[in-house]
Length: 409
Ligand SMILES: C[S@@+](CC[C@H](N)C(=O)[O-])C[C@H]1O[C@@H](n2cnc3c(N)ncnc32)[C@H](O)[C@@H]1O
Image (cartoon, rainbow, N blue to C red; front, side):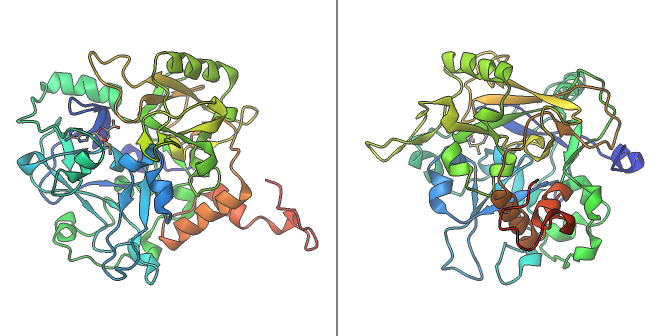
């Protein structure tokens, strides 16, 4: 049954979408015109990360966000993995840069946790439909030189015709929504112009949608059996690091892929695509590929909503399945970007607007990492999906007081 009222879901538009970019890999595009000062995106979920090592010794190095603590300058080893599109904006210079990262005036702050409910992007000039959205990785080229990369600077982007854009949007726009996305806030948050000026009203926790309104990810329109719900780039990350982290509930372990998907990955590996960035033990430097055994790797669905889709296992009442492809395959002359693979989510039966998406992969994350994630979400004022709440606060029936074992899930 739909968990979101279809009427509410019907208002969701495809404001922004992911697609290949000639700057490199994939990027984020405007699905409509935006006025200067308008909110372009509010991330459906972000996960604060405390350990710098964790952020720098794997593929997330190119993607995570670091915070500059205004209130607590000594606290530097703090960043976040941000879902939605946030980690996939390419870097733009001068007038090419058209969006600005914002935490709406509040950085995550351990003294004022409710102040950091939203992370997002705002248009810093008028933006036309079809433009690639470019943010800044910092005012210098150092971000690129540090990583041995060359920074591309585009003169002017050629915008496709309206017909071509419609086609592109039909192909690329996600049919899913999740978390505290933009649309959740569209009529609830004060005028975006004010936000951009940083006259930020304090957002009350009571103003958030009730928990059951954003359990995980839901379909925003009717999806026919067999059709594509969403496609988005993903990262290949070291399992050993992630299985003890609050990101574990979002990753897909190699062992959890069914044999047909494992075969796809093995083929991609032969094509040089499934690579795992990591530290070379001899040089101590981050190198593009350290993968020796598939079991040591996991997939981090770093873009879009796929990481937020609830996993119910192969025997559960699922309505979708995963496909894995090379990020380069259908794009002529394209490099594979830093991510390398694209995840595709397909419906395995008709899905109604507002219906929760349920993936047929097992959720093998531990009780401990689920609990840690729930705590991280709670501390940053983000809604906690119901299946995580149940982990955090299992029904009393499930535990007896002298039971020292972790509750069974
Ligand atoms: C945060 S990711 C952005 C998403 C990326 N395009 C992808 O598909 O993985 C950062 C990476 O994008 C690429 N990139 C972003 N902006 C760029 C620019 N202006 N010039 C060259 N490469 C860029 C670089 O490969 C960089 O490591």
